[in-house]
Image: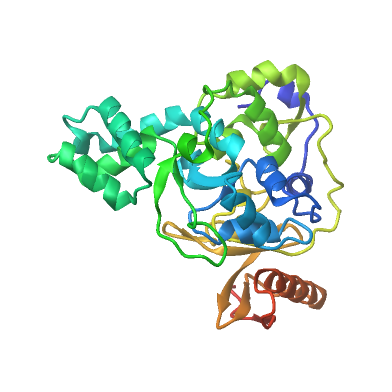
Amino acid sequence: MTTKAATTAPVLGIRALNRATLARQLLLRRAGTTAEAAVAHLLGLQAQNVKPPYYALAARLDGFTPEDLSAPMADRRVARLVTMRSTIHTHTADDCLTLRPLVQAARERELRAFRNGLTGVDLDRLAVLARELVEDEPRTPGQLREALLAEWPDADPQALSAAARCRLPLVQVTPRGLWGRSGQVTLTTAEHWLGRPARPAPAPDDTVLRYLAAFGPASVKDMQTWAGLTRLRDAFERLRPRLVVFRDPNGTELFDLPDAPRPDPDTPAPPRFLPEFDNLLLSHADRTRLVPPEHKGRTWRKNQAYRVLLVDGFVAGLWKLEEGALVVEPFGRLAKKQRDEVVAEGGRTLATMRAGAACDVRFGTVRD
């Protein structure tokens, strides 16, 4: 949406947006904060798989070790549950109990896709029964599904699981999610796991401010993409007197916090190795601030995201772990200085995540 005010607002070019976003994301220079504080600042980390949150923090925090995230997870100060975009995120305990209520309306809408498999199912009773089951003892999804199927034998089993996941804030209990530990997905409620009740669904205004601090400058549609919500325009309008307004090169109105960092577009941006599904690449409707147009669509295949390499702040290739080595697959030829910086950053990533193991970084096929 472009308003009359937006047409007179200063324009932020792509590199300016890139550097601002990297600074908010702790990717322009590593931060000296704790893992728990970083998870709070970033409003959570994508966690469909166990390892990505650890790699996400390794790219962002100075001196990070996997235990820095495992310890607060074991102590129940952070936890894994479904929130934004109906995907598993690692959140602080406080955000488990506030962000999930914020996006609950979206989870209710999600249930419409399963209505044919839920004919005759009382969803309120299902929520009560599912809560009793998982708070009596943590259950695997299969165990929960079978117990619900006994109550509604004609329902679709997958739809029953979806209904429980959408209606309740189900946390994946440890050891699932701990570094170097194995454990199948086992569920209980956030309230039970964290030992305190959920808070009422908050007004979105505070979350708008937090989103801008972590992902701004950003449009209304950008935040809606991040949250999986609609109708956030009113919150931005209420906050407009407290915000500054810019335009992107297409004229789209962007909001920001007055004192948030907006570095010079020529500020150096070191290489960074990001895990699959990193929120950096999922939290804007317009991703050109990070993904050059010629590379659009190259970080995904069907529903699977690849691990991404940033060079000069922009997506420039993919990477993978193969036979103990970090293999870099750039999208084009890198200058010698860039290659040297990528190798150094790759070695640092391996040293952080595989303490004591060999740090072999090599280049694979150039993906022209």
